[in-house]
Image (cartoon, rainbow, N blue to C red):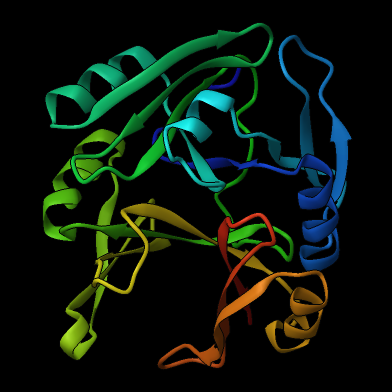
Length: 255
């Protein structure tokens, strides 16, 4: 087994209220194919990008739905020792909600940072999914933390996963946007939420050929555009923010 890197975003999981509808939406919006995972438990569908599995989708459990948890995306972050990572998360002020082991898949811990944003720490049984090079079309290209206080969240993640600060951007009345990365590559950014934003969460950006062309597709499939295509400061890239028909927030990015 190859060595598992610490702090790589390596899998992207959607929990939804409509398994078939969600598959149809992201197949058309992002261009993914889907496949079934032949394991125990509830149905699990994999997202396949250019022949490579990059994530999955499953039905939001009834107990989570009853507790008010909405459909959402959940990032998996790699670690060579998930139990040690879970213990560190609790020591650093986070909460560990659940640990489990999946035969031939790996061991994972679903946790929340001190502000409440949920993620999964993942120790794979075999080769770690994902890669450390530039993201291809169809992959998640940016990982954004919406936090109650990014300055409080930063030491939690930097100690837990070894991430490093990169650039900062002053957003005026919206505060500072702190970008971060690992091994010389930027992974995403962190910001303190304002009252108009969703509760603390991880916000995932999918890389598509053209976000402008995606608008009609999203709306035609029953999704909602929250932020129309917006030029990223200081470069020629564009992003948009949306909500899928089941209520899960997502973002698109094109270069």
